Image (cartoon, rainbow, N blue to C red; front, side, top):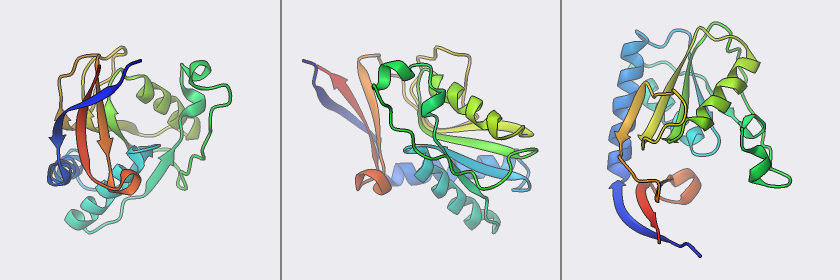
Length: 182
């Protein structure tokens, strides 16, 4: 049986804060402010990251950017392998996406399959002006032609490694660690 062993801590709480501050500045700069801008976090850890980014953007620009919550369970291409009865949670996007600049937020970008599913889910909500991607960690190993517009940290990994983002809101502390299968 495979077990996981912590190999390295790649971001602490200050590192996460700095990465999100930089991403917030980059989002504002690329979009020339916050007009028509919305953030949508992918359940699970993309949601608190999107909320934190909205707070950072508010601190910088003084305007509140709407934040939505996206559940992609039914859009996944591996749905049949997840569980006999996968748990579907609610998507909470209480604003129109039509014509908006949508920044999709996730914790780790890996194969790109989660993002593909999220793109399908967003398009079912309406046709945005554009969709941008913000990821706290990009670990490589893409299986689809997807890249992030905003990255907190690029972390080259092997497929035997697991990047685990832990956030105060979901895990009781902020850190990003690499674990290795042994």
